[in-house]
Image: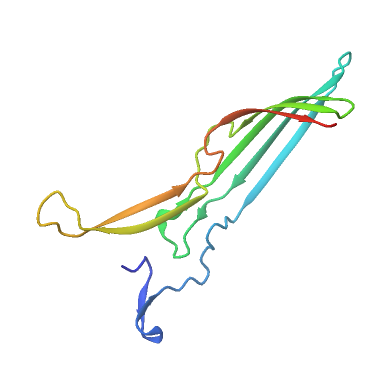
Length: 154
């Protein structure tokens, strides 16, 4: 079954073709921004200093399919990470508490849409059915997670 916008081309032995001139490349958002910063907090009287850091990544809508399938478009989203920590002034150790995907924004690293043919049916005779399936690939931080990191220099 040809995808959306396909037609049979006599120039290519009547195979299904699609003109993708000017269309979006797969997995290539028009806008992708990263913004981050760290605030160092001096703690006089203690042998270490504190810090707070945050990063935000924004991405505009993304088409994951070369054939421009409307079921493989993901809307724009942003992900924010937050970090708190302390570091030895001599640079020997650093302890960090982090929260990734602070606002628990769910998004996909990839989307795929396909048609699966099946001969199973609850009623005899088992006539073939075409089933449209959309699969998504979750990235590591598709849900919020919290962790602790320790860095030690010898």
